[in-house]
Image 1 (tube, rainbow, N blue to C red):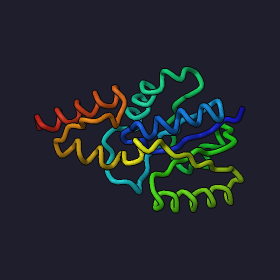
Image 2 (tube, one colour; image 1 turned 90 degrees about the vertical axis):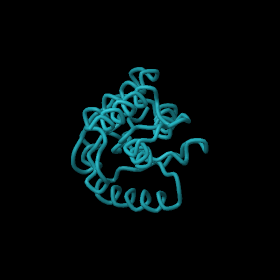
Image 3 (spheres, one colour; image 1 turned 45 degrees about the vertical axis):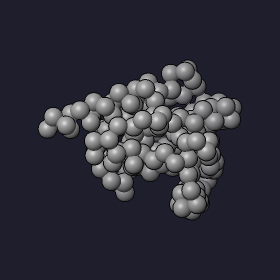
Length: 165
């Protein structure tokens, strides 16, 4: 089967991401999750090391089919380095789709690698890392399942640390 590469900042990793990971493993077999620093996104809640570890803890049920690696630079370069035959991306909305379509075309033009777009289930389509960060840093507590247990614990720790400052 193909080696697929699922890149993202995953800050934090949530159930929509996990849904896409599970679909990608079912479709392609081996999956490398690439944790990157994206300078175009607002401030990070977790370091790249923390994000990678939280993802590892969140995907243990998938066994050795999934590995998590950190990377910097271009996604196509990271995909080439691990010899991925395709890039997996996801979209929640039409705006996301437009952005991902442009990136897929740029990546293909630069390297020839194909991009496959997967969609999370409707019950996860509203979940956004940005809003989880904003909500948590503003003192809110997430009451519906949006994140895995390890991520929930890390969010609570960040929230409690912020309340003590």
